Length: 178
Image 1 (tube, helix red, strand yellow):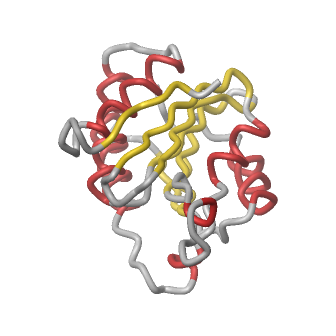
Image 2: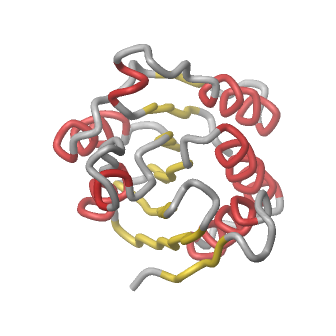
Image 3: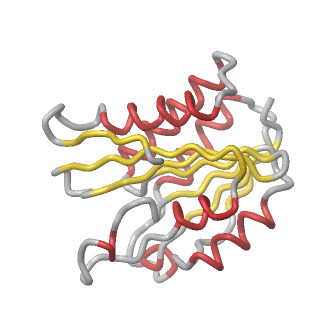
């Protein structure tokens, strides 16, 4: 049972107040549906820097579940006009039993990488920043967890498929990261 969860929103646009964090309240709602007694802590937004994100994950690892929101896209890797996205790379550097899948598409997101892994006893997952994608991925996580799924690869696949389901079949494709 998830008794304590920590939400870590990321992105300079959230830090600067240019984008309102609508994802965290939705994630909290989903967690409380899963366990009404869950202690959910939403921490202040993190700058999208690998070192900052990695340190925040380490500090949150005493929880049962750590959820990072945003920073899962390709951002600056595709265009200098896009925000920096380092959440997924910071996660992959430090997580054990790490599974990830990438979504490529014409859906305006260009690229998204969802990661599931463990740090000590904490399960660590990330969600894309766009609300509909974050909501779909979180709902898929909750469904998996309620069904007793603990295999990180399966959880990652179900979350990724939920994100893909938000778009026409021709708009995006999935790739298992190696």
